[in-house]
Image (tube, rainbow, N blue to C red; front, top):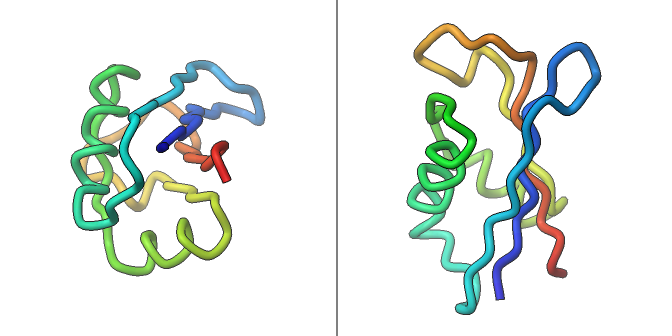
Length: 86
């Protein structure tokens, strides 16, 4: 089962959140699709996903995207994805 808690953080406060859930096991080749669906539900731009992001999520169960990871300007400080089904 996949369960990812996504938080949009601005000035240290959570301004939006969404819990992404799927019944299947996590497939890292589909992680961009998960990220895109999460961002659509939060109504924010989708950040650029690189291999290091996937390694961090797999190893630490958390992934942080800063403004540098987005192609567009964003109105928040960071997007945090946390694996809550370990």
